Length: 428
Length: 139
Image (cartoon, rainbow over all chains, first blue to last red; front, side, top):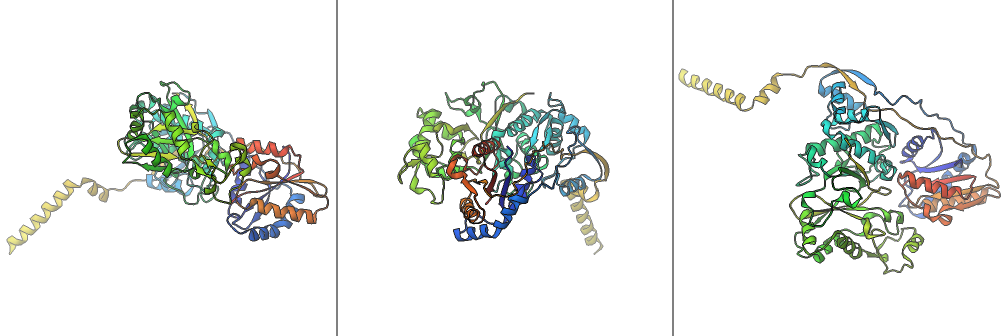
């Protein structure tokens, strides 16, 4: 748009800011660095920080000229080759030291292994799926195969992996935010349709946990690609404050379609696909909250468990960042909880509406520092202290998936800001 | 005495043989070593593909110019920029300051990376035709 800018960043985040600028095509921008932190300090301190850097703001505004240039671009295909000597253990060590692995073991991606992997897809190896943020590494089908080989995937997993990556590369998935945030966020992958049974992807007891080769290796390959092709390495540009296991292997499970209550459609049908389609849905999420309800015998009692565990604050929506309130949330209902609802005649819609209405909390319960009350008024009309504020703008933003096996648990995945679920048909 | 020693040696031999039978992997690990080999390996890093953005020159002075202050919603960013506004008005003759959160509240959003929203915000800010945007971000 051609408008000059001066970007003020705290010292802890300037690396991320600069990497982001490069990823957008600006090799250089006028930055002013303020000693960290800026948030959660008294107003007097933040004003002193402004006084401290104001001369630099003026200088950057009127004297800044670009110095750095983008690196020369190389062909995206074929992938480069390396000659190495050593044991498998030593190759792993070399990969780790070069930043080509996450710290977990990998299988060396030899040309033979990669060629085998390519047999699992009809896509050409030079097909460009997109650029993986924040580094904007060009992701070809060949490069996907390299990472699938490293993660120990089987060739038949390739269509699921490719579809998941294409979904993540959709701007609505906000992969950039997910891999650079301070939050303990992760990719969530939900798989539906016949492919679950064709490749043996786990969809029942412990589906998202250990012991399932397809889930584990596809989830590992996705994170290898995010970290290595996308370059989201800690401490910058991956700014995870703590991080978590989801940084190694992302959440991935098939919907337990065999446990769907009578009349309840599978998740991909809710999203407009045919029952016979194989579909992958990805979304950036926070770690889930476990609803451990062993006791309810009616839907009304069960709803109370949900609404006492899951408040709108979990979704960071509401008057703090109201723009997040249009983001879907994933309610991964355990089969037994779903049966309780269905047995009493509840449909997905009835459950959604009850959860949404009962889960609202009064405006007075929100932190005082939250901005954007004006926007809240635009969305809900006049707001008083006792005005009930829901977690999403509409009940429809609660997306219901049947997940896991026997037991009395369900899980709630709040979305990471700016992340929307993206679904893709899995094609061989 | 000799018989007792013979019995001891026999017992120990039997125990060792049994251990080798019961835990063959332990014995193999302890006596074999993985050999080094030459590897040809495909590089998993991939190459960067970025389209260069045109960067416009900055104004040589802010006097008489319009400056937009852009806050993304993170805590204290607005307080910081309010102080910047005070200092600009004190020290720069004829500068006009616009605060994004007052004229375009929909742009107050931590966005955290969403490209589509970022572009919408940039367009909303551009409508005010500022000569310079000063943005405060991060925690």
